[in-house]
Amino acid sequence: MHYTPPPRDPKAPPIRINLLSDTQTRPTPGMREAMARAEVGDEQIGDDPTVNALCERVADLLGKEAAVFMPSGTMCNVAATLVHCRPGDEILAHETAHIIAREGGAHAALGGFQIMPLPGADGKFAPETLRRALHPRSRYQPPQAVVSVEQTANIGGGTIWTKADLDEVVEIAKANGLATHMDGARLLNACVATGISAREMAKGWDSAWIDFSKGLGAPIGGVLAGSSAFIDEVWRWKQRLGGSMRQAGICAAACIYALDHNVDRLADDHANARALARGLSQIAGVEVQEPESNLVFFKPDGAGVSADAMVAALRRYDVLLTTMDGRIRACTHLDVTAAMIEETVAAVREIVRGA
Ligand SMILES: *Cc1c(COP(=O)(O)O)cnc(C)c1O
Image 1 (cartoon, protein in one colour):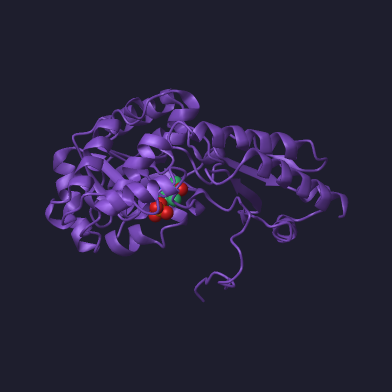
Image 2 (cartoon, protein in one colour):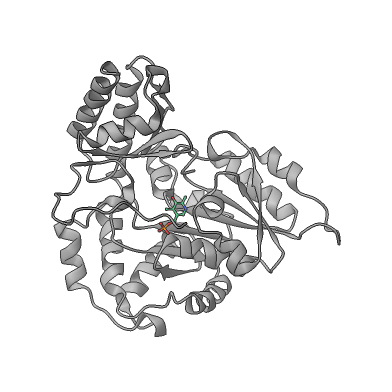
């Protein structure tokens, strides 16, 4: 059976407090205006000036030679491993990584790669864990081709890799002939939270990308960056996967708008996440993971309400969120206000009181 989202009454008003995901953001009037005004061309032949401007901008932001516009973050991950690996190769990643858990098995289905799941707290593995997972080249074991990290680590709780650990992972990978890939779906959240630039964060990583359809608020798109030779190879896979586009400047304009207007304000999302965590942690029996960015994971079980029951009950307060691996995940983003956070905490308190 394939999962199908529950049907929604098309006439129902949008959910008022939508903490499901930062993918739920709607383009603002300013962003829509920028899209409407965009100069466009044929992206597939490199002729769309707005796409080209976006790619140059992201390549510079991440300190790489070149970049390419993709329809989704998933395609950034998939095209990257398709270039870094050959069939039978091994990718090393944290056991909760998006490439393992959320991409429909793409890396195995399309590339014939296997992913070695590395353990570690909060979505991150210790550099030492990587070191221990490496083996000398031999005819028995799969060739180890690339190590991948998520900055921030999504299912880990929106947690942030320290610069020191990132550097150590790069050092270990290079010393062992592995390529390095950074899934930066929420990289700019990590940058805003730490004050470390994206260029510094991505330094030493062979490939890195950022997602525009998450907290940056654009409707579609990710940009993958790396060396010119790497991006050239990525282009072949983009074409093969059906990811080459036409007048994509309409979408790229939204991404440029997001870089101009929606990066610094990620700090507001982080403040809202902290406020939510603070409020929830004051409710007896509710266990909260301290947020580092815009994701808040919590468990209400200690208050006599299961995660599923809490999500269902909150839905009646017009609050939408989801369970993930037995916990509840709340995600703050540009359509979530401080007042909505207060309301959500009050609703959880009331649900716990009634349990
Ligand atoms: C969302 C996400 C992706 C995939 O991005 P899409 O644009 O949804 O395809 C990859 N990695 C992480 C960590 C994500 O959160």
